[in-house]
Length: 177
Image (tube, rainbow, N blue to C red):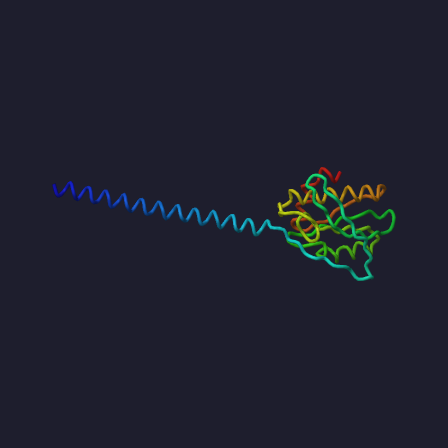
């Protein structure tokens, strides 16, 4: 009889330990999942920033382009170069804005190129609720390229991007042709 009771007590003890371990594992999974969602929300939240105005030595025209697919408004600066020198779209990295590309714009403009600096979707002064790691940002690039083709129909159009800007250019490659 003592052997049977000892066996039941051991089985109950093992069952209680397994139940406690299962609850602890489940709690860890829940905490890790919530942590992943919190990090995701931080990474994909919009990165608005005031861009301000530039000094008179680099004249730009403020441009706003509607993105028909997402409803966003892309904000940018256009600085016209010499006719026949092509136009270059400059696209910043993640959680940045068009000011990041200003030194490149100055250099290209000094060579005669027309330069167009934009704020990607949910960055800088452009509208948008979430950073999408290229999906909606590529629509910003496509809208900017379409604007350049419409405004300068006889000019070639190129694009230079950094990090997320480069990814957005690659993802918009169909629209760039």
